[in-house]
Length: 210
Ligand SMILES: [Mg+2]
Image (cartoon, rainbow, N blue to C red; front, side, top):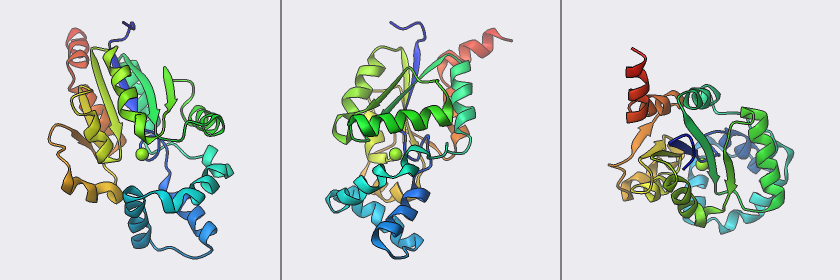
């Protein structure tokens, strides 16, 4: 059992790093046309249903220099620092493809945005996310998992102590078919901290401090 008893596991795109903006721009370059915001949201939904038409674009995007220089999501650096200060181990499970090249770019980008704060960074592809989250959570007494895709949050229900959906408008349509009643919703980065603050160990720490 690790010394820390709590682990916070994060998805990367649109939870830790801003991706929609740069990706939208790159798709415009790739298709050599303007794509308005409504169409962009529709494209994300289409991708969720069937990603195959976007494989070529995916390679183009992940091969571009912007893919290793995505910015930290607003407030996320402070949230990670505060979680860490409250005894949470920080880990990443991302559905980015598990190739050496992509993994290296991810690690570089995350290091640039947040420093060396993660106990593990796993690029597992979309199919193996659930198994990896379960492996990590099993080693801790308390765990949280944060993802902007509600379908993946639902997979973590019953596996982690606190499944958290990081609100993301383009993904919100999927809620209709899901039951997220056991998950919490974080509208902002600091909402993740508020949820963590209600967990038993953080309460115990703050009570001891009184
Ligand atoms: Mg994501």
